[in-house]
Image 1 (tube, rainbow, N blue to C red):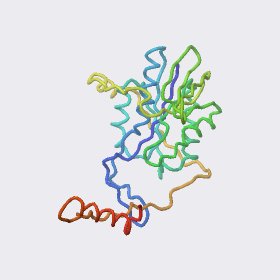
Image 2 (image 1 turned 120 degrees about the horizontal axis):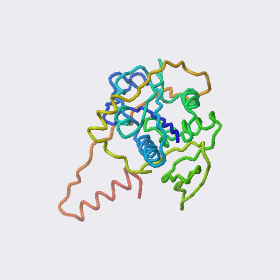
Image 3 (image 1 turned 135 degrees about the horizontal axis):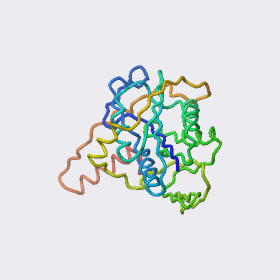
Image 4 (image 1 turned 90 degrees about the vertical axis):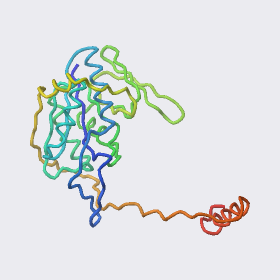
Length: 253
C-alpha cells in the first residue's frame, strides 16, 4: 500500500508573534510539524506495518533548512522517504495554489491513500486536504477520528453534532485526521539514527496561479486591563460592590 502524508510546517507555539505595519513578522520564527499531521503520520505507519508498502512525506515550504530535523523526526516514526517542495515566497494561507502544487507531487506517487491533518494550527482554514482531493479526482473524508483498513476498503469514523458517522470507501481516497485519531509513538534512538539515512529530496517549485484568499492585515488582541480589588469591611459589602460594578460598568446583570 502506497501512502502519501501531507505535512505542513507551522510556527512553533512558543514563537513570539510580532506585528509590524499590519504584517506578521516571521523573521526568526521556529517552525514545527503541524500537530494534526503527526496523527496522520502515525496512522500511515501503522497501516504500512500491517499490510506493507511505503509511506512518503510530502511538504511544501520555503528554502528554510531549519525544518529538516523535524521532518526527520517524522521519518523516525516509520515513514520511508520525504519530498520537500521548496518555494520562494511561500505562504501558508495560499490554499488553492498550495493544493495544486501538492496534488501534482502526490499524483507522481500513485498513492492508494493520502492522509493529512484536518487543519493547520496557523490559519485554521481546513481547506488544503479537500482541495488536494479535488485536484487528484479522488473522494475524501474530513475530520476522521478512527480509520480501519478492510481489504481494499477503508472504514472511517467522524464525530458529528450529536452523534458518530461511519463511512466506507474504496481506495484511492484522501483522509484528514482529527486530533487523537491514534496515539503517536515516541521513536527509539535507533530509529532516529536510521532516519538520517532515509531518502530526503528537495525540489524547487514555482507559485501556481489561482484565486486565493490571502491574509492582508494582522493585529494582536487588545491588552487586557488590570484587575480591581474590592474593598469593604466584610463579605456582604464586597458582594454589594461587585453587583454594582456588574450592573453599572460591565452591564451584564
